[in-house]
Length: 335
Image (cartoon, rainbow, N blue to C red):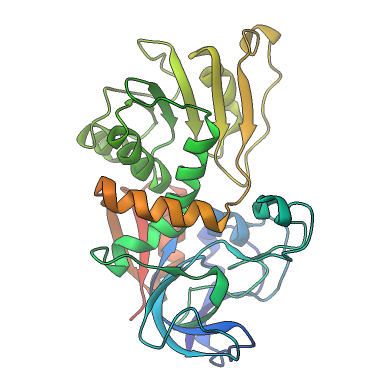
């Protein structure tokens, strides 16, 4: 099969993914062999490729926003039949027995595997997904539009959950960085009745998309919103945004950091967190998050803005993502 193989981490501009032929994987016990229809390109893929995340498997096939058709199943994989359309996400498998797993916090499992980082992912014509970690794609959501939901959507959903907001009606939510995750989160937030304030640097693509999706205010990254915000989420991997986001936060508000990697956070004045403001991170997701999110995505009529690339254009997609040249989400159309 054709696949994009990362043999050595390097800057995206050096085009480190090798488009090559590799064997079709065999599904082990409890696994599904999936013919990849499409795979979203996530900023986490960029972190894996460029070395922001330490190498855990090398060479590796990146890609963790997989949508595909089940071709065959290993012994004991009975949750999805051949021909089913399923999704594969970042969290590939967990131990199921540690104190985090048994307490409903499998996203924190120390023995986790991750698609496209510790296990081969979806930048390929075929991929293997554990049956118990595969999502059934709801009817009415096409594969290309579903792909960004597998990570950007699920992580955005979990970030919203971690804001601690109980009553979303009339709540003021800030979103910093408006790529794949932001443009899904705003749709959920507006469906819940919140007013959304978006701070992002790209006027032509990201700010324009935020306005189209109903943001009540759109400004540059460090521009001060006209009102204090009840909660905010930073999706951009830029720690220098944290002080500005805290400055815009109401007392008692929460600031959620939605990325797996972030540049250093500057020294903070205590006054920025005084007033019982909270700063917390998102770490991966649980399967419950994914199931809840997909249900709400259907109810909210979430639609993704997608720019398609061919499998052999994966390096181009990563460069476009790095340079903020993607309006919404990038997706590799594989088959």
